[in-house]
Picture 1 (cartoon, chains in turn green, blue):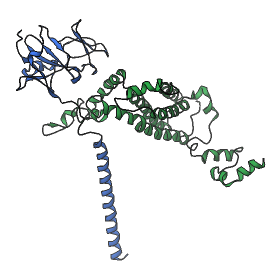
Picture 2 (cartoon, helix red, strand yellow; picture 1 turned 60 degrees about the vertical axis):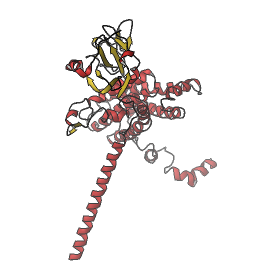
Picture 3 (cartoon, chains in turn orange, brown; picture 1 turned 90 degrees about the horizontal axis):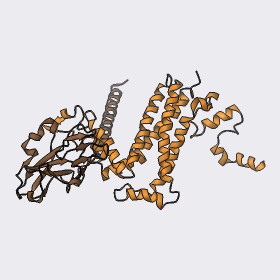
Picture 4 (cartoon, chains in turn cyan, yellow; picture 1 turned 120 degrees about the vertical axis):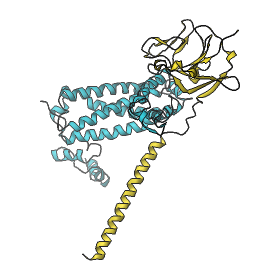
Length: 257
Length: 172
């Protein structure tokens, strides 16, 4: 006991924890408020907010899977090289020559699961009417997060660099040709010219910017790798923080009708 | 407030406004540079105009013999008894690469099953239009020269264009 008191009275302990043992409402609130990781979270949660039958815990599971994807993904980055000569063999090596040969499968299953939990979370929010004011802004943040989740899946799909990956991305990115004004086969692109030189061509349109070349190739593999590992996760992480913060600011998880 | 102070304030505000305008302009220019950076000047993709050999190197038949040697360059060269035409290897459905099945005399796409005759005309599967053709001509040295920069689409009536086809009777 005296040792415990010695520790909790020390300057080190006090410099980290700005509150007493949280056994009363004030210190419980301070425990959440004064913690950088918890401050996004509502200080108090309604009883209905932790009822599984009300929330399905799908938002929480989605965030958990995002963390799983981050951890397994970073581990995979220690072995995988996004270069045409190595990519496919590195993927096979992750199964055959690396301990815990299911690390890549965990990453892949987690990705599939995350898409499912995001949809179920969205369905729950819809069914409980939680998209209504004052939460309509957070619904929109959630829709962007859904798109980012799908983009993470899409960019990750190319990285094994097998036939399935190459052709799926070929087919998928062909859609970008038809982007209004910015895709060379899209509506309005033909009008963007300087004299009689067309400015939006197969070598300068938005699809070219996405692929780094006119067809899916080495530049595309590297681009999708950077998008998958850095750009999209950063955007998603930022919006997740906003999403949680707004749950708190909009009055916590909505209650039952 | 004295006149000098007023002048001082005006010139201060002018300097601040100019400063912010310059800063904003520089930021926009920097953002533009970031976007431009993503569009490389060179992609090191193979040339779109290239030679593929002498006309005598190609065998012919009435419906056309498909030469697959330049498939990796994105073309099939078809030799009929009348001459040559060059087909794009990009499926007109969603952009995969079909295979030429010699036994069945057709191009078959492995992605969604579109089928094309050796002429490039689609006849099965989801492809909405025939394969595209490229310009083929005789170079000065007598070799066939392909120009992928010029494409001809059957549904636009462009296969009638004399450049989409190289007339050359086949003689044994």
